[in-house]
Length: 483
Image (cartoon, rainbow, N blue to C red; front, side):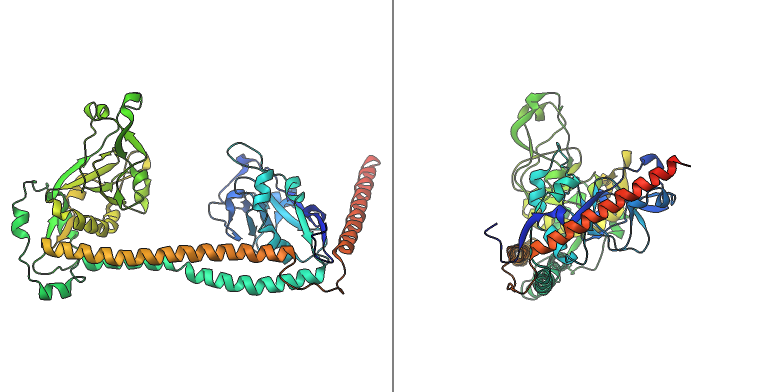
């Protein structure tokens, strides 16, 4: 207690707030319209999200009035994402499900609600220590109410809140500006690829360096022309390209190879040293290793084939194709699973440019994704083979790759700086809150009524209310006996 600032008092959170548990509404009564039921999964950000919400019959507003939510009620997560805070900001009533706790101030005029709100943002670590359960961590209302709270006098609470609003407002404004950077960088990289694959990026280079068309070299490729797939090739020519460039079907540029899965029942096929790339590895542009590995015995006894360095990889099946077509280039020899395809460029010098071009066309190919068995998504092999790729002369390809790499490095540097700045602002928020709850953010005032007096008043009021409630219950019970 000696480390408390003057006028402060140490208590439990439950001395100033009550955590009201939700109710386990029967799932058989869930419906598609009616009164929204706020579950743990609806606690998103600072506001409650009604997306993917289930609903209940309006009769429950009368049957379970203690669990009716109204505007500005605050819920706290008690299962999984424990400590998550959300405000219900609708004028329409809602119902509170189990594993969500409603935070109720015991004495609104004696405690600053905003002070308690800011304090609750700092309790996650304390709650994790109290959490119970395997896999999904749960906390009880008692766990939350038993947290230690260092309480300042009411006037100081108000001064702290006023200071926090100013400081955190500035931090949040900076964070809002910073959070625009990832989208800007994504657009910047896409614009670079678009300029690279349309010839605009190297327009100045072509004015000085004159290269003959690559058409002759392409015509000499041994890879056979893919069978036509409707009018895919003509329709996928997205724009005009320079005169000495040509449009080529992706499947003409090299052999397209699929993957496979060695038997999982044979342990001799697995835990080898050969990378076995699957969609879960396709989170980076360059592939030199994978999560899973297989042995040469697996290759000799399955449909899996070696894919050489410099090959271009595509994910061709999976739910990720709902929004993204991952592509990558191999920096070593690998193997693939059955949800992947690889183009092995016949001209190895084209690998790096072909990878950039593949990233560029990936967004357009997504529009042609089909639904496969069991509702998953897939890209038809013939469609991929027939997709048009803009191909410049080899010398210009190298210049394009060099320029794109330089610009991407610049974008990467900005991204690193962004992440550091974002991390700093997150730490700054926690630092400001920590100072606030140590009594270091604003000066103390000896004229303030001590927090111990506040707590005594709240305790007396709580006991009085409990006595009144108990008396009321007895009266109602006795009345029922004489009916």
